[in-house]
Image (cartoon, rainbow, N blue to C red; front, side, top):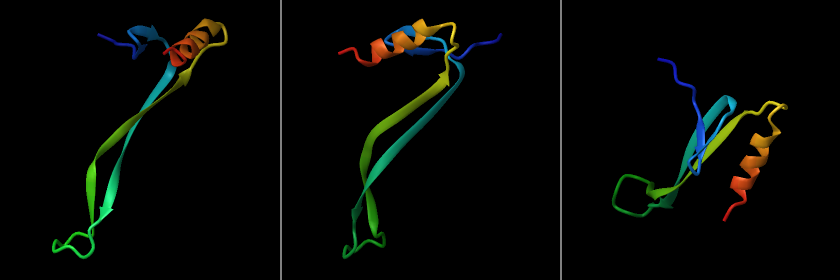
Length: 75
């Protein structure tokens, strides 16, 4: 069984060639110097996650790019 990775935006399939997904998350640090613990910094909880998607859209399918921009600007 072979599966083709597909990006879905708002439940709509977006076909990208050579799709690459990168996830990142930042933590806010708080200075703990002067406290009794041995650590100098502590994490202050999870912050927002960032999901970056990159891929290729063939020139013969400009409607895909148009639809991505429509979905990106939807409110």
